[in-house]
Image (tube, rainbow, N blue to C red; front, side, top):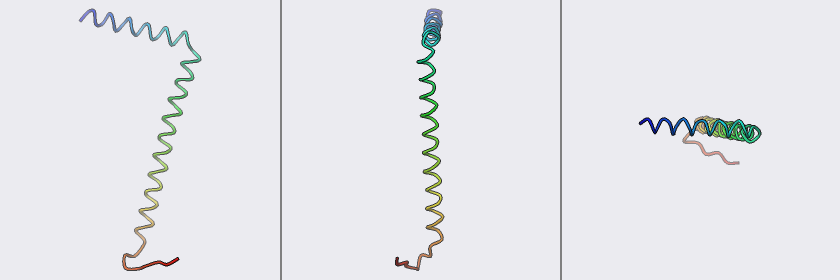
Length: 69
C-alpha cells in the first residue's frame, strides 16, 4: 500500500511539473476543453428549445382538422 501512495505522489509531482513547464500548452488545452463543453451545452440547449417549440406547435393543431398549404 505504501508503494502505491509513493507511486501516486510521484506521478502527481511529474504531472504538475509538466504542466508548469508547458504553460502555453496547458492554457490551450484548458481553453479547448472549455470551448468544447460550452459548445455541447449550447447545442443541447438549442435542441431542447427546438423540441419544446415543435411540441407546442403540434399540440395546438386539432386532430380532426387537415391544413392544406
